[in-house]
Length: 579
Image 1 (cartoon, rainbow, N blue to C red):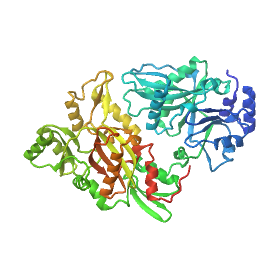
Image 2 (image 1 turned 90 degrees about the horizontal axis):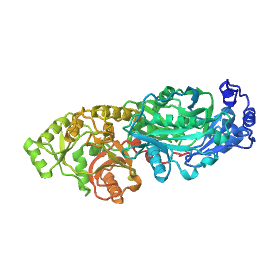
Image 3 (image 1 turned 90 degrees about the vertical axis):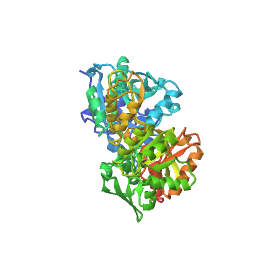
Image 4 (image 1 turned 60 degrees about the horizontal axis):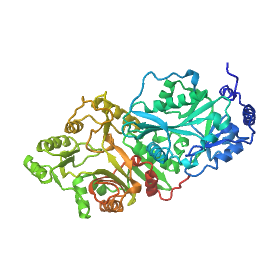
């Protein structure tokens, strides 16, 4: 039997006093009560709660948290005593702590191919990990702030695709014996993240197993981790590996980073991500939220006698005329043309002869419904009269009026303009799959769709429709074809996020000419919030062609840019911003 130790007494509820807990902890470890321990992880500090002499000292330390960082006090046995020191500024983290005793661990029955796991080693590795964390809405790491490893600091591991060299996953591990002389020889896992667009299976599981086996080889006894109470997908993985709940607590400071954790479930619980990001920001500022139709993303905001109705990012501030100018792509084209902006050639689909003549004039066409959204009914790079006619028939399902436009190659750029200022810009890339030499393209598409739906609350998937099949046929394959290991294949021509596309933030590198053109377009449409789509050779080059305007742009697609903040600033300029 193991000796009765500090953490076991925590589990049994034998912890009546913070001071007694701290004193017993110090006695077991042979440390002085004044040796309060904190480990910097690059994004904030881990404060080992029971090494602090009293609740006030721990609370004061949490309140010294630096702006832009997130500190976590863990293993807090008497959280109420710490919260009582600063109840307006601290909160109990709604996460569960799980533990895997290494004696319960069983190795994987199957192997995973296509990537390797290694330690982060250089500036390029840190940059790649931070790009991944950015995609997952996590705080970036500043390696210069890390507690050195010889002083008990953490180690970051990454999963690297063997074909592309891309970083597709990362995890942090902490050796408790080195960090705070833990006599139980424990360890912990933090910051597990996997690229949501990754086509490789099992990356998260492999990273967790790698950390377990690494610490086992160092003679440690268990691995702890913290997971949000409602993260069922992650909990399913941890249960599979043998983790069990541990009765201890964590405390954090109230700030904008932690805001979703302490505002609690509100009326936005059933809203889609595009409405939820706005409602969360409104609640953070103390703005009253009334959900009118959750399924449609309709809600009303009230603050300081001002009342504004919203459907996601479409509000009362957008006039019916401006909305019509965006919805009818013919009117969009004419309004931007009058403003002197660069546009493709455009005409309504007519007779077969007229359509063929327009195709012959431009060589390649785009077909789209006059009024449509989310990429529905859009076909790109059509080169034969037959392809054009088939695309016209598919587009008529969404609108009897169908447009033909000259096709222009380049990257799909979305620029978000709020209050006639550019707030965010992103390159959108078409959905693609990566061959593994075993599964068919159809199976890879299904797997990628499941991952995309899980990552976007069901908002994004790759449809197996006529346009996807046409794209595959153009590449000389079909749903039953098997791609070689590592081969990438775009399965759609359009880059819409709702059809499985991915997004790369380019706000900081956006060329001034493109930013000026976007603002000019927003003013031509007289619309306060708009997503403008352009085709460009690159985001940092001035050449461009405007494609269309979206009067209900998805603000959630542009995180970590402050889209919701600027949106609520526009609606309620006097609202208080805290944290």
